[in-house]
Length: 83
Image (tube, rainbow, N blue to C red; front, top):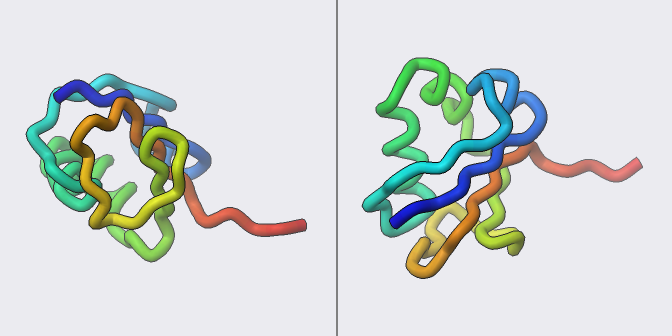
C-alpha cells in the first residue's frame, strides 16, 4: 500500500523532511515504524523513544497497534501540551 507520512517538530528535524510517500507492507503503525527505522540511522534516531512519539492515522489519534488497512496518511509528532 502507498501511504503519505507526515513528520512534525523534532521528528521532522531529525528525519530531514516534513513528508514523504512510502510503499509499505506494514499491517500496523508499529510495523511501519520498524520499516522506517531499518531505512537509515536518522529514522532510527527519530523513533528511538516511542514514549515521546504520538501518531494519527487519517487524522485520528491512535496507538502503535492500530491497523493500517485502508489508511492513506500517517502523521508522527511529539506529545501535545497545553498552554
